[in-house]
Image 1: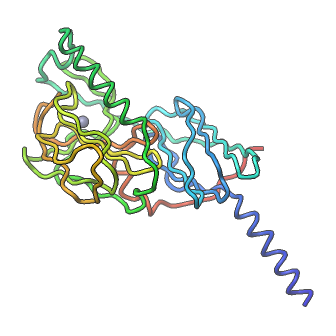
Image 2 (image 1 turned 120 degrees about the vertical axis):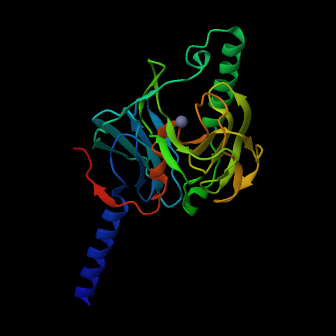
Image 3 (image 1 turned 45 degrees about the vertical axis):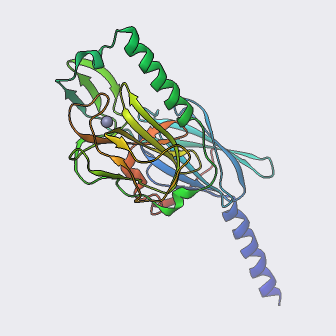
Length: 284
Ligand SMILES: [Zn+2]
């Protein structure tokens, strides 16, 4: 009887220890998507991800987070538990070597816009994109998993430092997949359409789908969008056609992924439910 009581005590202690342990799933590497898991976590704050962000915690303690393309070597994480305790962690982040991509033959006004009309259009695009990318839907449709939205050759990787007509510009925020004009573009996951905008200066016709917990996917340069804001979509539904609208030198899909307004490598979505997990040690 006493033996059984001791066993039960040990088991309870182990369970309590395990319940408060923080697990990280995925690679702690620049431009990657990771999952944290901690039962009882109320809030997770990731510091130094080039900004400080609070992440939504699901009822099972799962938090999604993206590591910025230029994330520093060390990142600080704070977990606020339901008993108001704060646990702090330091995460070492592996650097990624980003390629340089030279793109020539771009209409010069799309590289160095100066006309009042173009600048006004850029403002409209930034305003619409900013509104969509910082408003998050509830739910966790992302758990249904993701697919690549169109088949084709990758013509531009995530994170590339891009040089248009010899002029250095922002790094590439998504992945370019070359495909024939008119090819169907599928929703890469379940979610809600939060933007379906037309004729943007850089992105042309663009659709953004929200998958819950701050996770969104972006589809740009479409010939035509087949969905409107507010539509609910399922993974694989046709949301538009491949095109070359906006700043594009040929027909392709720009597929982007964003988590709490941090862009990451879209292919990291494909293993979202299969990432390797490990327990990480608290900072002392
Ligand atoms: Zn692109």
